[in-house]
Image (cartoon, rainbow, N blue to C red; front, top):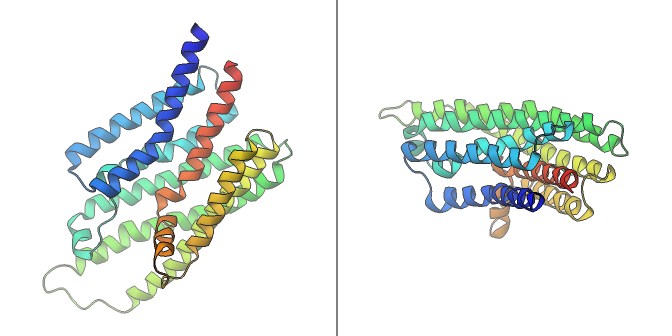
Length: 278
C-alpha cells in the first residue's frame, strides 16, 4: 500500500511539472499581463508547489543526478512568473510604461540561463566515466560558450533597450541616433548564435545521456528533433512569413529555449527515482 501511495504521489508530481510550461504559456499569450498583485503571489505559490513536486519525485536520497536536475528544473520555476507578466510589450511606449517589469523579466532570464548552464556542467561530471562522455563534453563546451552570449543578450533587452525606450518615448525626446539600429543588428547575430548553441548543446547532452542508458531512445529522439527544429527556425531570416514566421518567433523566446533542458531534467529526475522506488 505504501509503495503504491508513493508511486501515485510521484506520478501526480510529474504531471504537475509537465503541465507548468503549458499553463504558463497559455496564461501568457491568452490572458496576457495582469497586476503584479496577482501574478507575484501566484508565482510564489507555483514555485513552491514545483519545489514540493520535485522533492516528492526525488525522495530522500540525493544523488549527483538529482543535483543536476534541480538546476535544470529551476529556470522554469523562475520564468513561470511570465504567465502573469505576459509577453514583452509590442511597442516602445508600452515597454517604457512597464520598464521596471522588463528589467525584472530579463534579470530572471539571466538567473535562469545561469542555472541551466550549471545543470549542464553537473551532467557533464555525471557522464564523465560513461559512453556518453564525448557528447557530454560537446554539450558542456557549447553551453559554456552560449552562456556569456545569452547573458549579454538578456542584458541588452532588459537594460539597454529599456533605457532606450524610456528615453525616446518621452514627449519632446531627441532624435534617436542611427547607431542604436546598428547595435540591434549586432545583437541579432548574438541571439542567433547563443540560441543555436543552446539547442545543439541540448541535443548533444540528450544523446550523451542515451549512450549512458539514462534516457530512453524515444525521449532522446524527441529532444534532438525539437533541438534541430529550433536551430533551423532560429536561423530563418526575418523576411519569412506565414507559419514559418510563427515558428521562428517561438524558437527565439528565451523561455522556450530553456524548455527542453527543463523537460530533460524532469525526465531524468523521474526515471532515476522510479528505478530507485521499483
